[in-house]
View 1 (cartoon, rainbow, N blue to C red):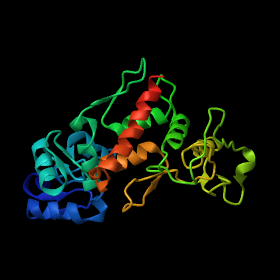
View 2 (cartoon, rainbow, N blue to C red):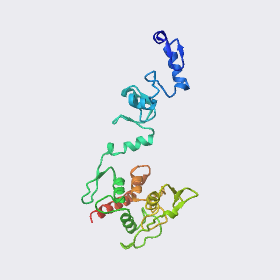
View 3 (tube, rainbow, N blue to C red):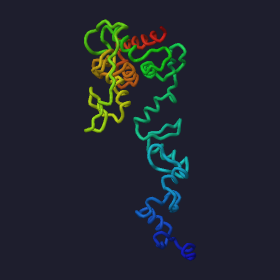
View 4 (tube, one colour):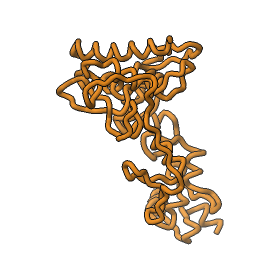
Length: 281
């Protein structure tokens, strides 16, 4: 046995002898018996108690854009530059072009240039869409929330530039949105899930169903039918949205030419300006 280990390329689990190291490497790499215990980077078999996945994570450098591992960080970066969408600033590969573009629009690259004007808030955001979403979520100390925004916009968008639905009606502070609350009776034994009575979507828990019912899909500006109350002001676009922040993000992404038209751009600016006024009340 000592002779075999010292003079030949030996695979002990298979009790096979190979004339060259490359032959043994090919055997380990292609044999189903060794698919879970052979590390090609180390060119060795792992111990029976050692996981190949854990070994790769602990001993090698993994690419964030795929499942490959490398011996060095330099080799991993070179692979990322050649194969994946690549951010040179953060030395990071991405699985898709869409993920890369989202990263390039993140605060790490564009900064936080939109401070919230709400009293005692102090938070900053990448763009107007994120700031509006902050207000809609009710996380601002100014107490502005999605319901406040929906009522304000529907009451002031007299020309229906960014809101859809029937002709404008007077909305008063006394009005309130329809709020749905599901109970255990929403559980369907046939479908083995809690079912939304409005759109028939399935949810694993009652809490999840009630979160869904409180989402923009079913509550906005006093309307409980789930219709999308906002629209892109560009007539050539035709897209509708559940929230004002979604309209603003749609415009900021630049896919739609809405901001190239002064009247349409002004309509969004007026809507955003109105939100800033609400936070200062």
